[in-house]
Amino acid sequence: METIRYRIGSKLEYDEKSGMPRIQLEEIWNMAVRVLSPKEHDKLMQIYECGNWKWMNGTLPTDYPNIVTGSVTNVSAKNYFQETGNPKYFPSINVISLKDFYKSQRITSSQLKEINNWFKENKPDRKSRKRGLLK
Image (tube, rainbow, N blue to C red):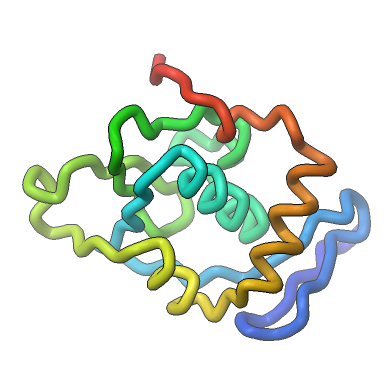
């Protein structure tokens, strides 16, 4: 079966097989999204998974433990993403807020709510909700 995706900023469509909301994300090279808490990290991972993005090791975003160990972390804004860490050690990376990332991708609050509700119902034990150590 073919996966259905919606264009950026339009009505949500759902994967025919899994029912997962799908979104087409635009990769933003040399950009990282700053997440301020484990909850924000989980929400970003949900969006990345709906966009069919993966961690650089090929793992689904919500199938990887939450990497937020302090108050802030930065995650690259592209497919096959990674944690970028402190911007002073990655001077070529620009950092934007999660809210600005949503705005740049034209993701509305109602779409965020629908996506979050799908993950609550269908992947309640996702690893991105839990803190974990990188191995």
